[in-house]
Image 1 (tube, rainbow, N blue to C red):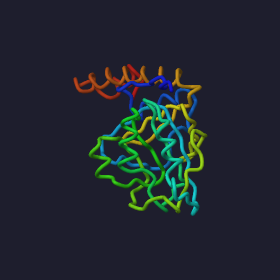
Image 2: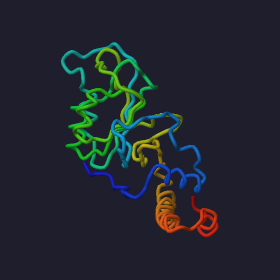
Image 3: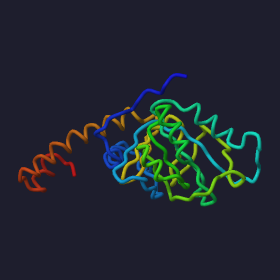
Image 4: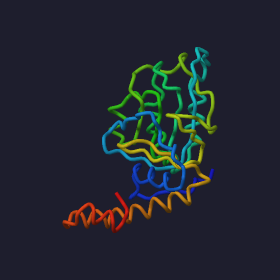
Amino acid sequence: MTDFEQPGDERLTSAMLSDALDECGLRDQVLDARLAPLVAGSRSFGRAATARFARSEADQPDDPYGAAIDFISGLRRGELVVIATEQSNDSAFWGELFSAAAIGAGVVGVVTDGNLRDTPKIAGLGFPAFSRSRRPIDYRRRMALVDTREPVTIGGVTIATGDIVLADDDGVVVVPREHEAEVLAAARRRAAGESVVLGELLAGETLRTVWDRHRIL
């Protein structure tokens, strides 16, 4: 399976992408859910690989995690796992071993409106993880993976597989694939401009002077 083209640009932040989306007329692409990074300072930037869990007590005793295993086994380098649960608190949906398998596949992180578990071990692996909360409960016979690689909605934003997602300490931003060239170009212009502005402010220029000169804050 061919890896997705990488969007990568380490200079960009969620704030820069949010401003670029505003500039491009896309004003509702930041998740309103407050998904916190497992480790402060984490950053994940990649293409969404979506999954959706729903409440279910059904079980397959011979292969209870088959759907999740198949999904994770099909992940591609540069993807960022996005798990929608409708903010379920019934169980956790991601832990240490899923993280290890994702790292082995070249996955760049996970974002979920549900819970993580094994959090010290995920942190120890250095895998960027953003979630609503944490809970130690297994999802077996509580929740089931019902969709993969179909559009999901988290925090009021619809996310499709292949969309660009950037998660950091400030929040989670989604760039629809059909708008990525325009938005990333605007964000990179802003990143370059902010570097100049920062230098001028640190050198003693006033905020008014810098704003009037660059129109960037």
